[in-house]
Length: 452
Image (cartoon, rainbow, N blue to C red; front, side, top):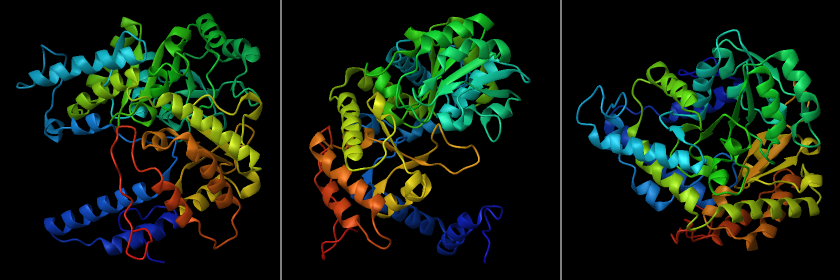
């Protein structure tokens, strides 16, 4: 088998795809590269407009947020605080920094916000720098309990800081920390930082007992709201800072609806200063000021909910879970009402596992992701399918589409090999042609009636 020239170390599965792509892309001029880039971008929009996007970690921007992105700002360094910038001619960027910090802090009901992080993983690393030293212990959720890779020691960001990671006691039945065991655990482990929140977030955390335990050993409690920040800003999920978290980190897209990036919010001036110093000069030299204006607007839109999407997003997730369960799929969290967020998780262990299930759905034009389940062994592949409703709702899907979507997902997961349901996905997608801002989206169709 041929090997990739750009990643010869990649897995056999990646090698096959990489080699095919490298054979296609041997462009030898700027005009050829531009043409290929334009084609790839065009094909992406066709795929998204033609399919059903249920990935829990993506979203679509509002018209205002998208229109305010100015790439000219991206190449303008603006280091330091307003009034003492290293560079000149950046006064307008100072306006954007102040507006964005204030709006992002307000959206999470905090006093201080650091908004320069390029990812939430970078925001988490900043927290490790701010609140721990190499060799310290932190306590986080395991991957099976929904903990993100940036929380982990092995192949994770915490390991880069030289931290020892201990996994918090967890109750799979409650989908939350085992509050009966948390006090004994923290006194035994003595963590400097406790991290909750993460990738699979069906239900709020019971933060009170966790904060009490953190205070007993002098630990900082960090809440990673990467998936739920937009719901929090809208007032439709728990308020982490009010309920006991010292710091909230999050992705600025996903449910938040802003440009890609990360942020951290806190009520503590001391903690905010530490996070700021971790951002610059430790982790960042330059950053992308073009993110700021769109992010400020996205923060305010998440608060104002005009047009509203958060209520429908959660209602859609709950109803989708009910419908999937009624069709015979194993939807986790049934005894707790399935979900209180934008996420729905299917146990696909009897369907060949989460990875295979996600691949079947993708072939039928339904895009989602695999996840681990709390009762899995750590040496096994993900058994869960994680669905997110936020993007489909913002693209205009109403509750009148839930039953048909559930039937389509069910049929896709139990379909016989070789059976394609992509035409049915396109048909359902064609019913969602106007997004929540009133923008009409035409689904590209060939003369024979098939999808592009």
